[in-house]
Image 1 (cartoon, each protein chain N blue to C red):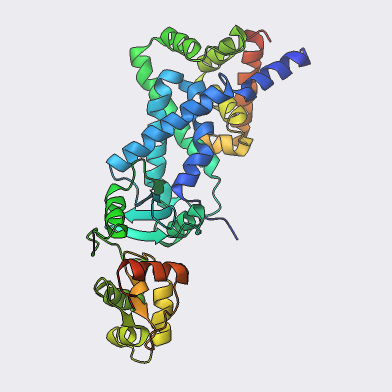
Image 2: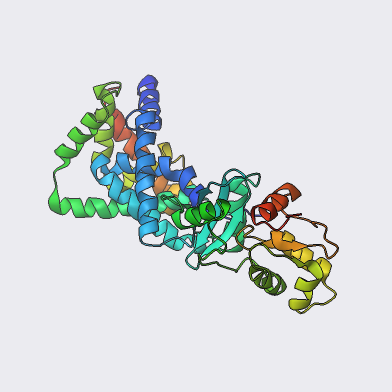
Length: 159
Length: 211
């Protein structure tokens, strides 16, 4: 028996932290809220069509990924990424060290597909197949993007 | 390549940006703004929330048409939400605002200042027979009563006293649809989905059990 999707409120409670973390790490804290609203409003509209047995986490992160891409496109026209990083730092004063901010700064600088692959893998806990579905590429390409993204982070960020 | 570096990056990625607790609070605040917007723009099919009563906290659910469900405290909210999600729509969210209209009418009713509820009702959880039974029940005046047989007859099923009893027992909107006003023909209390103590309490409140 495949499981029917839960009531929307339960779905929201189960996924809001993962979606928030995904968005903060891909678009930064300033734009995360707009993207968060857009993600869940889209999810609510499409919710009755969501099939039984669907992986709801992968599904909502796929939507969040698309919203993040839209946001990046919009921002490319405006463009002030430095302010975003500062906002991230002032918002979280108890953060352990600068290295952490550096890492997430570097994540946001990755090419879109690599960034999404890394974030979906580590924050969304998605399998390669689910990452591929979210980004809209082959599983092989998802695996490669994830690998390349990690490589770049390892060379750019001192551990 | 140094494997400790790899572990460090992977671990840091898994931990996410910023402290977990602060992030979770930010996510909760974002979710709060979301449900407020969903309510303002009426994007959900059902909203639900608690209302106070002398029986404890009741769980209520409202659609665009009106009150669709009122559950006694011992019925767990998640179970009610799950049931509504399956039977009506999965687009169900917790109301960001108190359910003021229902709360006000219930307070007036329980303090003896209201004899009829005027908030709109949504009857969609009832089948055709239950709708007839409960529509008739809704018309029984405050302070008076009817019998299972009478209600069954009026619902078009003269020998269906038992079936009428079942429909009344499954009343999705008790108190507001006064199934407590239906008694045994001989004068016995009969049954009540919320327990006989509550049926007696409601009848006494309405002055229908004076003797």
